[in-house]
Image 1 (spheres, rainbow, N blue to C red):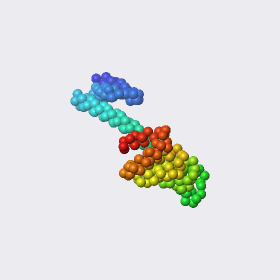
Image 2 (image 1 turned 45 degrees about the vertical axis):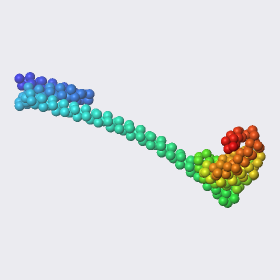
Image 3 (image 1 turned 135 degrees about the horizontal axis):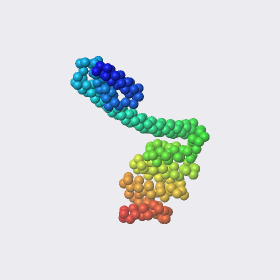
Image 4 (image 1 turned 180 degrees about the horizontal axis):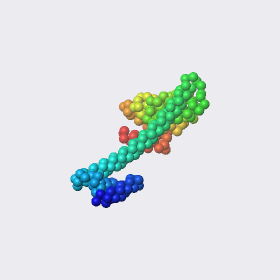
Length: 254
């Protein structure tokens, strides 16, 4: 019996060695090999005290090992998912930082441009590409379009102080009135619109200034003066697009 057990043990030991060397064994293969090896030990007399309970204990340990392996796989899967999520968040953060950096660069460029314009105004010199009439007007107009009426008002006033009689002067003066109107400074608005009428009577902005002056005067409660502005618009510019609106206001006031 011992000779048979010894041969059986040698055979199974060789099987277990080959299994480990293959590096492709599963938990089932591992459990099966240990059972064979343990059985060989029993038959060879090397484990005279081994019982079925010992075999079951070994099987239980292998089951526990298999469970631990499954848990480890699940944790590795979760970790991989977390790493992917972190990488995605990192990419998103980098994109936001890049966009913010570009906005800061644009803001710095705009501030440098403004500084050049103001510097030229203070010193009375013209920096090439910085304080030409077109550049000054666009700078103020961009502020107006952005709703920065205080800044736009300063820009248009500076423009008029340096360039009172250029092609852009009528509209610059008109937008001084527009800024005051947007800020609800009705008296200033009415006065600035009136400057357009007096200084640039042949410009395309004169009828617009008459109409907006009438609206500003209405806001001040100066109804008679407002009516006079609307009547002048209708009389001097009967075919202008704002003449109809002026007529409607006059009809309502009667």
